[in-house]
Image (cartoon, rainbow, N blue to C red; front, side, top):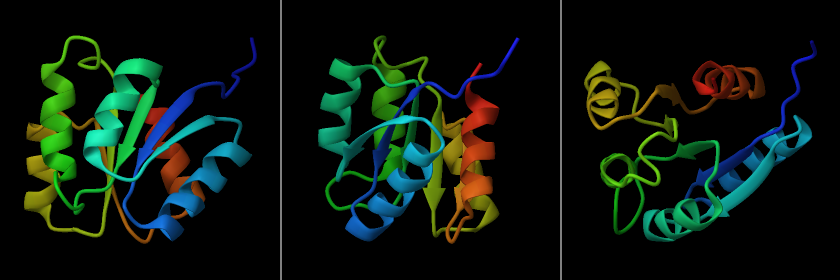
Length: 125
């Protein structure tokens, strides 16, 4: 039995360079990537394209990653999708708050490709 990395990941990141870097890491590792530059766009794409995992930043204009998390977890269509928070906020309270909002994993920037992939693999069942 071989473990294949086929899956679709929605990346929510308002920094174009960060979005490109993360997309590059994931596409190189065999994932299909959907990009969203904000939470509202992410919700629309998540409902239509049903990703396997969502990776989101916290600090974004309009709606934060925490609010996005809450919104996705309240919707029956996206409630079961694991969410990985990827943030420059590295305080224990931020991590705790993320988990309370429904996040499955929390990694901090700067991250390595290995850290990102490990976080994603840990939430995909």
